[in-house]
Length: 203
Image (cartoon, rainbow, N blue to C red):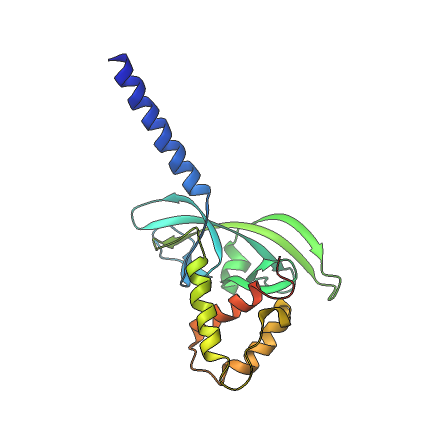
């Protein structure tokens, strides 16, 4: 009896630890996700871009509270949150109203971009989203976006290597190319993210 109790107790501890570890794992959605201020999903505040990292803090019936850690410029509302310091790789975009009136984010670090003189902040925020498919592996996401880039962006000219430009340069370069492709807006954003995350200054 004691032995059975020990086994059951051990299994309970294991599953609790596993669940806690899963909640702290960095996860990704392969599609953009709408973000909300409340667990009932009645107060929209922005959107998470496809391929941007999150951590799940808790789950309720139809929603999950997620944590977003990213960089923002302090100029203006700072409503666009970026993947890395001084790199305009968009992770999330929030509404002006939310950033002005309701956003309760934690400032983790402040730094000045030596090239522009702009102040950047590393910030963290918890918001809610509807339960959706997420993965801890972006492998298939990168394969799909790479294939889209190869098939759509080599018709008019020789295929470009992502390393030909840095993350910020790719914005203007890609915007000059995308009009000659059949990519819709969402797929274009995914391909741009692939190029920026694999650019010459990628870490």
